[in-house]
Image (tube, rainbow, N blue to C red; front, side, top):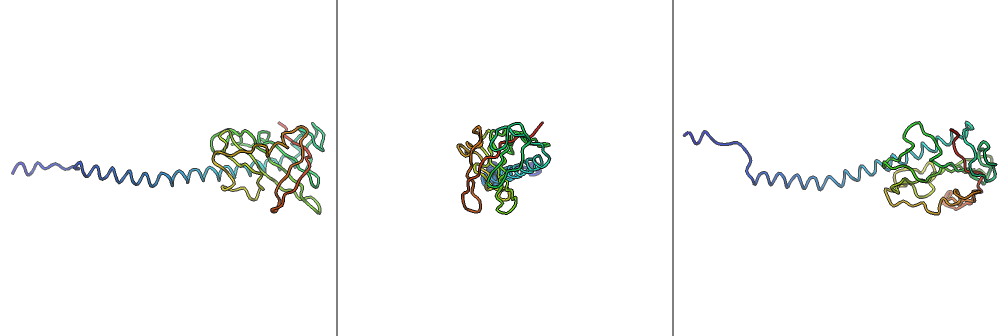
Length: 199
């Protein structure tokens, strides 16, 4: 009688192994989905930050807070002007000051190379299109010139992004002509200036 009252409550070894196996299967199934979700969120944030750089460059140009660093049509050390028809102005993202979050990308790496490019594509009057290209130290980012309205998570690469010689015209001194795709057609624009925000 006494032995029957002393029954222990607990799990057997087989029950514990079954629970561990089930947890391992659930973890193996959920981990890739969580990883994809985090990576997609970082790409979306990168695209959002790229739009913030564009907005900051647009505002600085309107307010007269940009000066010419590398001349093209415009003279060095003067206030950067909006580009004339068929030309562009580029601003390195490292020379654009955001109120917060402008020194590192959403992938946690500092930006190495990137530009906001303002193109005057208006056939009648001025029509400005804003493009972004930029990568961080981990080679994550936008590796092609992407129009402001097209900036979204799919245009951002998580590693292995290379802008290589695509930005060479912007790094030349004086800056040179740049070919961009507009409405599916490639057009060449004359460099007006490479500008930077006045501190």
